[in-house]
Length: 279
Image (cartoon, rainbow, N blue to C red; front, side, top):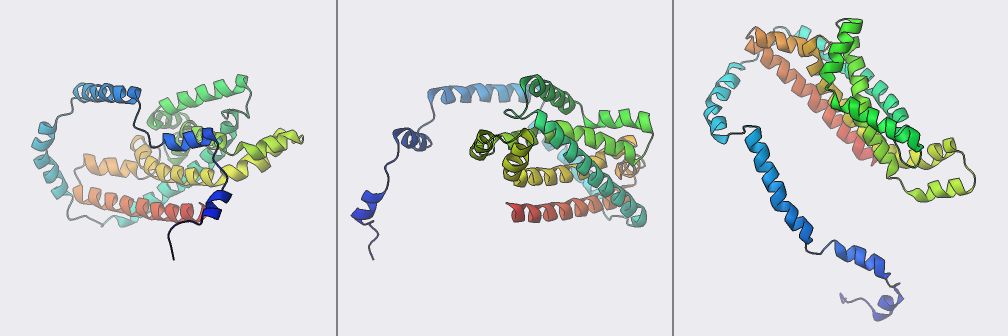
């Protein structure tokens, strides 16, 4: 059997258009001059950032001994309060579930207003600005605001995660819907489909795998975020974690960290399995 393709088969293949051939060949070209000029500029910005942030490898090496000493105090872990830890982990998980569902639904609604081609300009730009503002505010600030409004507990944390999700995942939802194949959308608009029908049958079915994947990523982030929100009394295991640190109860602290790692790892594996099935 020869590896050469029959001449008749080669002749039967359609020739590539010049524009398509140029697009395919451009991926293998040497980087352009402006890219080569940008490299030293990026390197200088990186050095400037290292200097401004006072990043010091020598100081890091000198502090390695202290880090090792801190880690040695975490062993052996103390699981004598495992009941309390598990109860707070369940609360953290519940917060993440509710916050993810509410955040994903609201983010999807807001994303329709931030998707070019769907939303008019008078709605597109204000929606994008609102999302930028929300994304600029740390979740801890939202948590403090809701703690002062509704009191201590997981409810404040859920509200903080929900609002924070709109700024982050809402933008990703909008970009996912902007990247769908425009062919079916244009065809539906040509036959007089309404905006609702275009979204329901032309955009959402194409974007659904990405939307689901991003929602799972949001859920993973909310589990970790709920741990941090507990630091300000917004529910979850964060407050117990902070208390253990302040009391220098390193055995209890180690047990909490191990349980959090197990929970996050289990969620990560489950999310990865679901993403593999939908993509």
